[in-house]
Length: 183
Picture 1: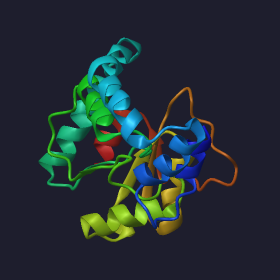
Picture 2: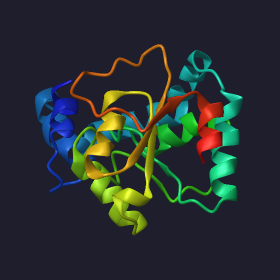
Picture 3: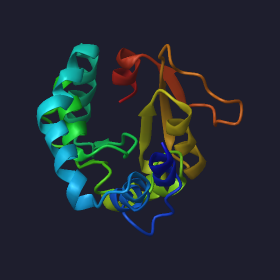
């Protein structure tokens, strides 16, 4: 948890994976080279067992297909504290792993994380778009903060959604079917 908190406070000077490694391995008393193969093996052989706790949302595929049909740039902007392989597996479980995303943020390719606005700014830079040309879709506070940069936001209703009163009000809110209409 200490290493994850350190990643969450990353100021963009180093990749998240380095921020994690700088804290995690010294706390545990191991060298990265000793433990990393165990992490890799876990994600290759065991992580997939978590799929049984997930559920596909058919509307998600329709949302993504609509976005790609309109030639939008699409980013999987998940909190980048997991390795790319884990995120790609989760996309496969959701039935949306086969799309040509412009970016999938991960612990390896990100140097900030939500709700740090730098995280979003780096995505906009990668896409070569302004914040006003983008919409952030998510179901929690740290997704909606993107509005502070001028982006539109879409809050997907979820049983886990609990917005703080300081969180910017979403531009739109609804379910995935509503999102298709907006796109």
